[in-house]
Length: 306
Image (cartoon, rainbow, N blue to C red; front, side, top):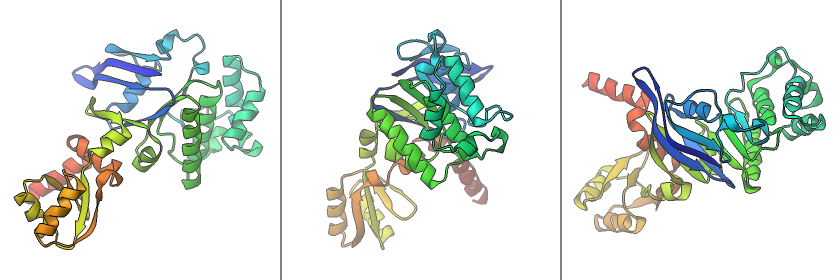
């Protein structure tokens, strides 16, 4: 289990993490989401003792990371797959890590096989690895000590579609066997597929957290029609809130009520369904709208154009 309690980190007058509290539980994958600069990586670095907190606490398996006698046996960490000794081979990196943890050499071969790095690849120097190979090596290092907890920051970077599917299955199986997984990723579809719980952070503060089912169930109804203006007027007349998506409307009401409003207005619908399948991307963009660099620049351009 991972527990974060009232965590704050300030740099001079800038607060990178602001009173953050959440829990990642055993047997579940917790997706940790937020725009660039939202505080995800800082929070994860504090968890594993790389950055000191200004205030608040983090615990892994009931203790501070610094108090774990042999951390690699209790928590596997992958924060930056490129932060590996470029002059060593993959096998050498795993061998050093195994020796540090007091593990037998056979664990190295077991982990290489588990992450599908061939003997030839394991013998290459890391400087000659692709990013995807570095990710596999980083995951192998994290799993080496058979820990109860995994803390992974963007582990799918550089993986091809087959590699992403492999990683998803690996982490799902790990959680299903009772492990705790905290996973940060900008690949929202992958988070949506694998995560049980979601923690969304924006400008250093938690903006939403809960089970994936709970958060996406609040997404309302997705509706499509060839007469979008007419449906919008009918929804306004019915005092229903809605937002414009790329090619649809998302309405803050259940599908039955939206269907009744459209029928009464004589508007034919081409799609009507709960918006949970719309899904995580729309929820994420809505929750973090004020912190999205691209959204702000678009709005700024519109304002300038006006």
